[in-house]
Image 1 (cartoon, helix red, strand yellow):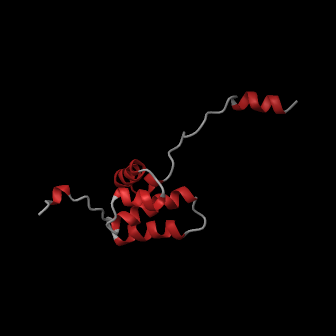
Image 2: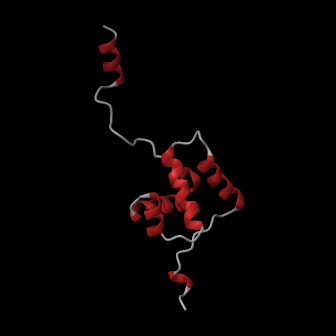
Length: 102
């Protein structure tokens, strides 16, 4: 019999927390990537493996592991993109404004 140490069980801390995740998935105002991250958590709670979830959502298993880890560490806020992501602007705001005001 396998010990609990090797079982990778995922549970939400409370019913309210699970409701918030379900609402993220159902909401039409939430970006698709946030809803997908919430779906990962719901599928994990159903008992699906990270590989199964990756196959279902067409994601790499490492991506599934990343979002599960971020949720465990940061809660629902961990499902959102962190500030500072993406390419930095090529011009400073002052230079950009002076260029377009000609």
